[in-house]
Image 1 (cartoon, rainbow, N blue to C red):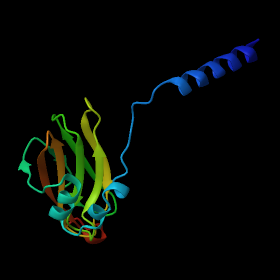
Image 2: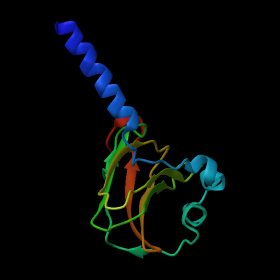
Image 3: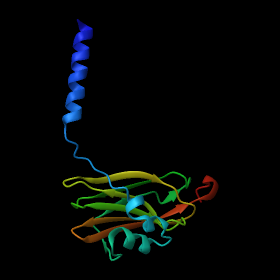
Image 4: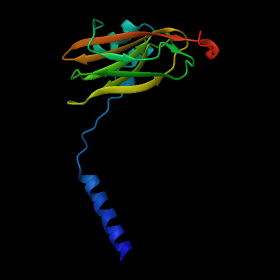
Length: 150
């Protein structure tokens, strides 16, 4: 009897999952904005992703370490109370400036954490688009060689 119940519940769950509408969607920015990923300057990458590079400082929180002892795994967190539609993380220490782009669903909360790689000391920049306006925050991250911390 337990096996029949288990099979019945499994088939029922499968039927519900197939018929339930999916509200999540993702945009592959590597396909839709290929020039943004080849940009070697932060301003050029911002312009490719958003159409303009004019930003306003503020309304975006960027959390990153002051000193990163390992440039291969630098934790970066971007958060904002804005009702943004797109978030981008960029840096100027590597040959390719654009690190990540997120599409924020309507009513979504902007609170993204990623680990980025940087070859050397440089600025990390976070951009949030809300209503056609761009808001930004930047932070200098010092990458030490060999984990010396100095």
